[in-house]
Each structure stands twice: as C-alpha cells, then as structure tokens.
Length: 161
Image 1 (cartoon, rainbow, N blue to C red):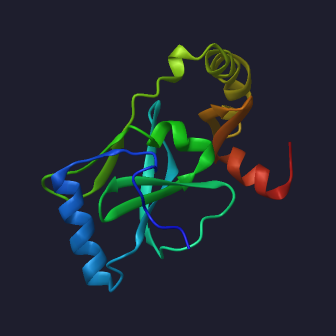
Image 2 (cartoon, rainbow, N blue to C red):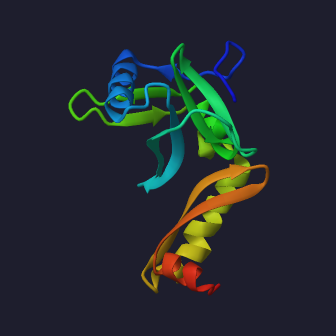
C-alpha cells in the first residue's frame, strides 16, 4: 500500500479546492480516497483535465502519486506527470469545479511544434473533410498523444487509418 509522504512530488492545492475535495470525499464515504487526474481533452488549444475520486491503495506501474496537502493526494498517469507536478489545483468559486493550471507550454517544445504544424497543415485538413479532427494532447518520451474527434474517432474505433 502506498501512503503519502514528504518525499512525494507536490502540486499546489488552493484552500478552496482542498475544502471542496474534503467535503466530496466525506459525502461519498471515502475520506481517505485519492483524486485521479486524467487528460479530458482539448478546449480550443488548451488541454483540460478531469478529476475523479478513487480508492487509495496500490499504484499501477504507469501512475505517479502527487501530494496536494497532508491529507489529499492525487494520482496521475506518469505520461502527464510533468503537467501535474508543481501545477495548481483550484476550485471555481461558484460551481466548485476543479481545474488544473500548469506551466507546461507545448509552444516551447520544438517536437510539439513540429507535430502541431503537421496536424494543422496536412492531417487535419484531410480529416476535416470527413467531419473529424485530431488534437495534440502531449509529447512525452518522443511519443505524441492525440485526441481524435468526430469522424476521426469513429474511424479509429473501426480500425481504419
């Protein structure tokens, strides 16, 4: 069983977000649960994230545990750990929705720029002709992670190129 400790990587957790998470965990009957952070997709050119309450316990090999406070920990796929570590989790003052503000800037990454240019100039015009789009989520260890939408997503499910 993995337990949060001082040697874990950290993120910045606002008081509003911490209060929201504590209340939610109590209401769900899981006061010790971790909060999972996963890529949710693109909103314009901005990567968004989803949050979910998960049981605390064992991490998978492809996950990392990140400390938010003494009693709140987050679990995220290792592939997005550079987005999560050092980022800020806040909660909207009206809706309470959690958000992740990260300093990761794909525009500063030459490989991400090249992949985005390829998507913008060659791939998306062809895919758009069939009602789809492909958005760049991240580049990690030389691998491009993309989100497919519209007809592009349907074609991928059918196994079409």
